[in-house]
Image (tube, rainbow, N blue to C red):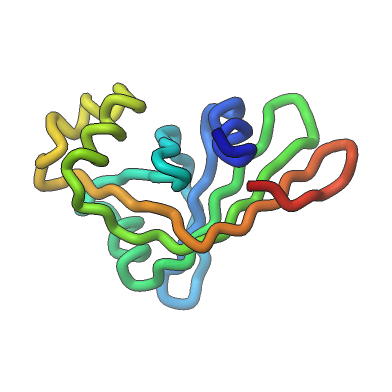
Length: 131
C-alpha cells in the first residue's frame, strides 16, 4: 500500500476539498480505497460535492493524525469510475458504504479515482513528498 493510503487510513477521517464557483469547500470523508495503485473515494451523485468534482476535477485530500502535528496533503484529479467491479471492491473495502449504497449499480453511488496525485507528508522530520 502507498504511504498516502496508509496515513489516511490511520487517521480515520480525512477532508476532501473542492471548489464551488470561486470558493473553496471542504468536508469530512471516512471511506477510501487503494486499488491497482490508485486511491478511490465515493459520494452520492445527489450531493453538492459530486457536482463540484464534475465541474472541476482538481481536488485535495487533507488528513491529520490525532494528537500529533503529522498531516498529509494530497492533490490530484478526481475521475469518475463507472466500473461495477471496482465499485464492488469499494463496497467490500468500506462496508459502512453499504448502508447508503446497496449494490455497485445503485443509481446514486458515485466513485472517483484520484489520478495525477502529488502528496506531501509533514512529520517531525519535516515535509516530504510521498507516494
